[in-house]
Image (cartoon, rainbow, N blue to C red; front, side, top):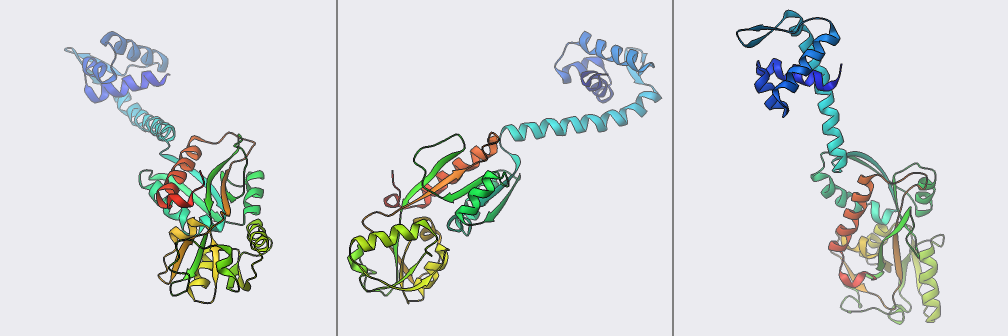
Length: 302
């Protein structure tokens, strides 16, 4: 038995005539008649009686129809699933991301992404950038978003976004009205910073050292959102990435462009052992476009 024969059988059962069944299947009447005859020959018993030009299903046909209907419904589901996969409407993605992206930005971007994809499921785990890289290498996720500079795109890694860090100050701070903050403006300030284990901290410390500026370190955390919360308390200033700044909902903080530029690069990684699924590529492109819409163009390094 072939699926096409079963489709012809179902169509005749529904339409009661070969003519209407052939129209339903978009084939000629002789072709529909041949499919029914071939099916009857393969199963060894008649499915229809010809009475005054009409086809009357036999009792055996009624019994067979129930099974055929269930089987073809399964085939229809497979076809719909394939169609949804082709148009990136269905799938499961395992995503690992650095906290700067995973705390607020990616959940918001993903929510918008899933509005038109009700059959898609996305799992998001928050880890340090080093752990994200390890998860990608170990094939424990489909996509990794890390704070990692990448000089050139590769088959399994590409820049997501290059940004300029901003200076975060309390709303009532003396610098709150500045249009640009420079290293010398922060001389003697109480400062909240990333821990020394992060490359970003090394870049920030090197810049202030080069300008001969000393700060008073009060607080360390690897979470950008945590830095913003500490700044809003009024006890310090900090340098943070613009993605976190765009997502932060506190009113007692101001984000000001900082010069000279300190870059924070966000990179997308996928396992090298397999080609990224179409859904992966669509999701990454959506996240990139979402970020560009949310950020002040001055914060993006072109």
